[in-house]
Image (cartoon, rainbow, N blue to C red; front, top):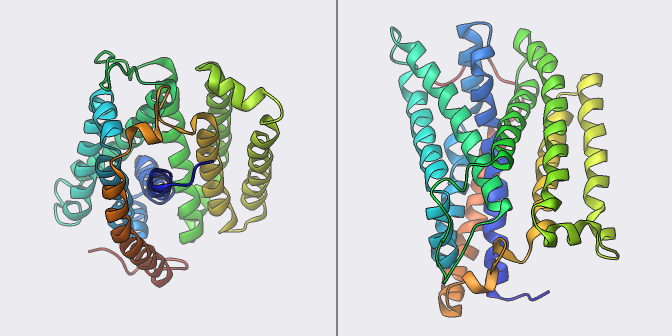
Length: 334
């Protein structure tokens, strides 16, 4: 394994993307569940549960995208034309969703419009993220250091399946977040909803996991050729433990365990993706080192990252610490 500047930056960008997925995932999932709330008061409570942290969660998306642009410009130049449509739809969905946080509290007559914007933006953003992920995993055609595929190569049965998997998985995260943060009727409602969501998420993860090795011979070799596959099988073993923690937490009435188990499931899936296509930055042909900027650029920006990243982590941790525990329904975003 080659530990150099390109590898370090690839790890930092992967960390930013993972942090975005597990943090923004639950508040996107909460938006997906928004139409299923039983009253306007429940919808207010759902939105208030993420109001202090939702915009901070999206900081990691900026860091991941900006880091890819600055540190791996060739990968950015290939990925953007290949995934232009799902990425632009995702960003527009996030904009409408963000605006709805401010407007739905003030537009009493047309509150339903902003409820729809919040729910629709959350669902569209989640599906587009999953589609982009699936399109990247299935491979992007590169020729002469440029994207050589078609306009709709991102749209395939595999990418649509990953889009559905991400949306359902985010809904599970949202349900588990509300179990942890709320009490009363909405708490019990989300505990009932979480079980079928968990089953659906795991079923879709299983489909995608079984499908992925057959997309590329390299993926198949990583998972099924000895002795390397012995390490790969640690992923399903860890997944089995997390599944047990998820369902035992839902059954026993523990409020925090399901949420952290669901976060662990997403993290394990992310590790599984890394096992599949490392060291490719853009599968199947563009490696981390092929796509990296010059070492001088990597080293210069690494100094800034070494300063800013701990600050962002500390701020994020502090925000969650301040707003820890169960919500008070009488307080919130107004």
